[in-house]
Image (cartoon, rainbow, N blue to C red; front, side):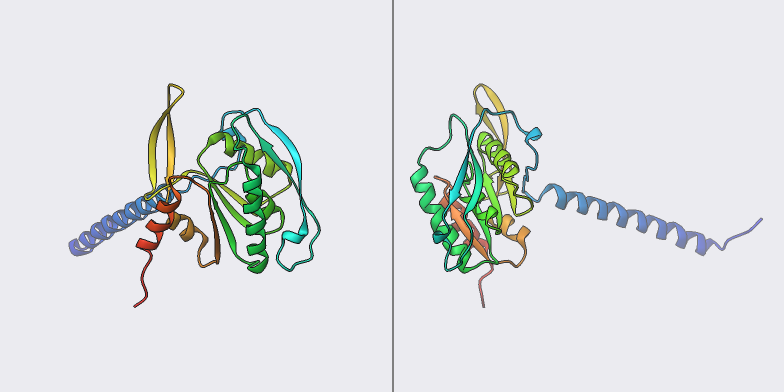
Length: 223
């Protein structure tokens, strides 16, 4: 029978205990960062309730693209019965953002309050990277459907969240039903993109000032 020195046995027990603690801490920390990212990416319509949509083809003339000769941008846009109808204003936003993206082609568009994607879909179809943030589930469904039908792949990420001063969730009562609403800060979205240039399009009444001021307030100041 093999005999071990008592000090050796004590050392092994302590080492195993320390290894177990480190493993538990690592697992907890990993789970914490996964669940506390605050970004509720939606990739499939199966995650949402079905919405009746009316879809049509959209054509965007290349003269809106800053100094770049490109072919016409063709994509699908989808509306539901409660879609925002101020289309002319959204088209003006689209023209301005496409011009800015043409001037800074390697930047990422963060479209806060993306609605049904009048801006986001055209920019993504043009080959630019887009993060579309929208809180209305019907708009999210329309965005996903139009993205799929337009053949837009990884150029566009869709976030089903309300822009806020904090990350997390809150409960919302609508149509006599309690629904969870995800909250996300502009800071969290920016961190997820790493060190990339960003163009912001904020069309989220009641949250636009909150979104930008909270980010600027927390942003590290130069010495």
